[in-house]
Amino acid sequence: MTSSLATAPTTRPGWWSRPAFWGLAVVGASMLALFEWLQMRSMVPPEIRTAYRVWQWLSWLLWVPVLGLASPLVRRMISARARPVLLLLTLLGGFLGTLVYWSAARAALSRFTGPPSIRKMSAGQVFLAHFRGIIMPGIDYLGIVGILGTIELRRRLRREAIGAARLEAELARAELDQMRVQLQPQLLEDTLRTTADFVRSGASTQAVQLLARLSDVLRLTLATLGQERVALRQEMEFVQAYLALQQIRNPGRLRSRVDISPEALTAEVPSLALFQLAELPVAPWEGALELSASIADDRLRIRLHQLAPARPGAEVTEAADRLVHLRQRLEQLYRGDHVLQVRHENAGLLCTLDIPLVHLESPELFPTAGAGLRAAAR
Image 1 (cartoon, one colour):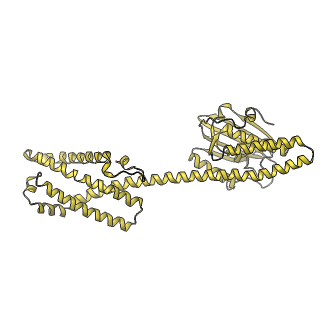
Image 2: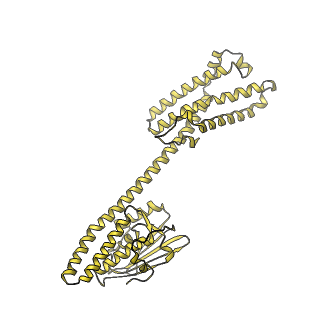
Image 3: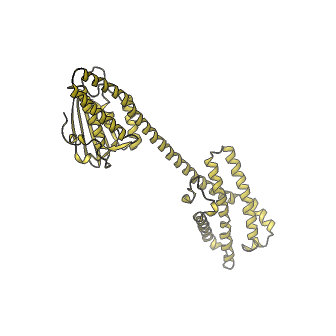
């Protein structure tokens, strides 16, 4: 029954055209009639058992049209988030209509089948007798409405959860793209200023190298635009290009060592996650940067240790905006199936990230950096 009700709002077929829905309703009514018959069989004389059996089966089948009529009404009430007063009035009105229908239908059935005591009564008497006995039809009616309401409410909550997850994912992608866009103006300004200084001082070789590295960083940034997850190879190419650019801009101020196992290069990582980890220290891109990644127990483990110049009183805390944003991204992507630890150790900042292993084939966007991923950098 659940699958028959799960139809798209824009292409929802009429409830009369759903064979599975009606098939399940008839089967359900027949099973209830059989269960009731088995309970009453010992109390019914053998000579009238056939009449009782047909009477009970047809009486339960009378609820099938009620199920078909109530289904779209309940769906509409829940989808429209009707007010409690309207829901109560609709429920009472539906019950009154159902009671009239059920009493009239059973009065009509009593002309053809049923217990002798009922068949001796007139149709009007049968109608009034069933109309006054509101307890059993009331229970059946509330059961039908309750089941339909529960099914539809679960469908609505599932749609809302999917919509919220999509919105959250879109927001995360927008924030990531915003971070990329914000990175470029400052990077361009600093790099062009340094390039101008190189040109004025006659260091044309360094100026050309700096512009080449800037081109690589911008190209890799655009290549991952709109992507929440990329291969570790792709992420490392960006980090290596950015490291090379910083080393040219500030010779001797940054040393790096990269140790990535070859099988980890195709592992999936959050886009710009390594860059965000490297940006966590108060004085990023200074001192010594050690980066390693390995695979163990179907998990990808990344370790980044940055030894930056000592700055008394300057430490990264859990309240830091950069760390909060990174934790929010990881929670949105992995829903708790990750471990991110950030602590101060050996006069530096140690970051470890443990995420599920998912291999993702990615094209080489920065071929010149490929060899550097397997060897120690300068």
